[in-house]
Length: 459
Ligand SMILES: C[C@H](NC(=O)[C@@H](N)CCCCN)C(=O)O
Picture 1 (cartoon, rainbow, N blue to C red):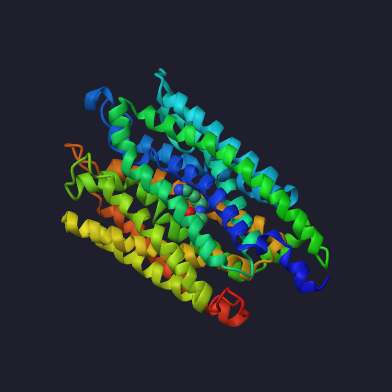
Picture 2 (picture 1 turned 30 degrees about the vertical axis):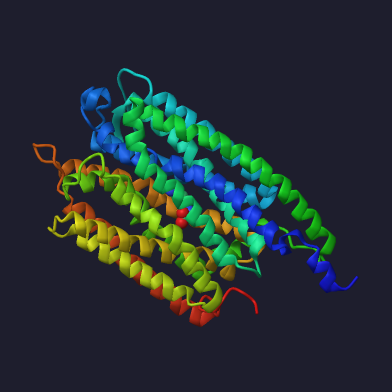
């Protein structure tokens, strides 16, 4: 049999097979993203006085809400669990790690659901953070467990896509996966608050998210069947044995400057997006005077825009290259938007326009950044590389909400209204740093020839 005939036997060379695999893992991730942001539009209820808002208020402070929101990253960062997740992925593979991570997501969700649905007396001192009510601390514990699962699932899914799409439509596939995930975020931002109100409690939205995560475990098990078939077909056509992961290879990863630029760009860019979304619903109410029942719909526009734009920019990168340029433009737009949010302009129309522009930025950077990693780092280290990037990003996801929660608390007037100038200036500063890093990445690409400005699809 000729080499060409052998290559055709690989399952991932079948277009329908690789897009089916992508669809399956994307659905699992979408359920995860729904759960990540299911609490974001509920901030006005969580921070309303106990029993207020038709009995839905939980009486959390802005500081407590910030502590809870950051919990997503606590175990990932402080217990290094995300870093270990990357090592587990490279050592034990996609099937084991994927199942482990989806089960962790579901387990963490159940803890959070239990905490929010029950009354607990007293408070707990959390070293280095502050004193929070027991309910907040248990909910944060659940969210921290969930966060470990969600991040490890994220790196696993990235590796799945690289496995199936290298040499094909890699950036488009990553864009489609991210877009599908954003559907989950948009659904959470848009529907969580009305759903909680209709069902008579915040915990109803969390329960819905937990049910979806349970479905996510089952969906991933279906992917495992496909993954086994892909491995069998790849083994049948492999001409050279694939090099395995060795701990000694990590040195090479740490010495790659381009890798660090991507990691810190990821930290700064995402610091200006995900933590911002946690506070955006209340921003719309207090700064732009939007009705509380509709306020979640404006932040929901952000992920909705990216649903179309991320695959679109991904296919531009696949065909024409210019990955570093796309990241520079995205970082500039992020800075512009947060700069405008910091200004004393209170028109809700402006808020919508800015949110749409932020959607473009949020389409540009991820569509170029994630497919650029395999151009800098070899496949055998990819799990660890994605894990380290996510790890560094999680430092921001963990600590920035805590910081912003404290800033909002400090800027709350006697009437309970928050002045967002300082908050939004902080977010704009993240954008400025992202611009500088993306230029450095472009220069490093010129120096090292990673090919970030080159197309991904091989002609
Ligand atoms: C693909 C990328 N994922 C991440 O950055 C995750 N580490 C964060 C997931 C947070 C979920 N709301 C992305 O979403 O662009």
